[in-house]
Image 1 (cartoon, rainbow, N blue to C red):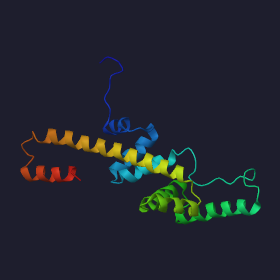
Image 2 (cartoon, rainbow, N blue to C red):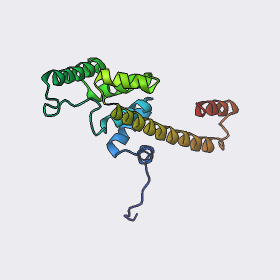
Image 3 (tube, one colour):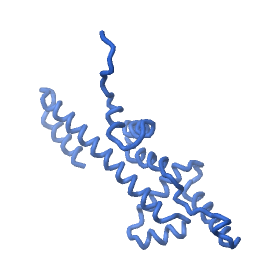
Image 4 (cartoon, helix red, strand yellow):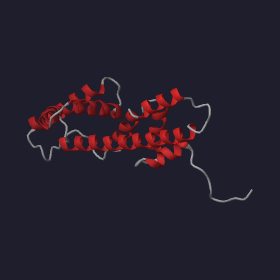
Length: 173
């Protein structure tokens, strides 16, 4: 056999290549898909790539009044502690923060919630948008993969009519 650069991507490699994340985070998402928690894994990957914390930043240079500075630090600490749920994990705390954000329906509710939680509204909107985009890409890939699998399986004689019906119901979710 000759040595060359040709090769084939594994199913995990195809998934990672279809997503706008690096290899390590793509593998995290692929493992999540295999365990049935692909969307949560995608949200966790986005949480790990956030350029800044969604919480306000207290600075003694900007916040010269000690009371204001201490109030910001206190709010951030209490809020992060609330969303941590005793897990001592910042990425999981960010997921809980995102879930709470998504429970709020109006922009006005989100603005009030962000103020009281010590969160920067714009950063949470970015986090929400980025996680929605990645989950959408993941769902598109999974849907396309299942359709390709169906096209292969429909040519097999063992693929009975009731399996086809169940497959269509599954893919249309």
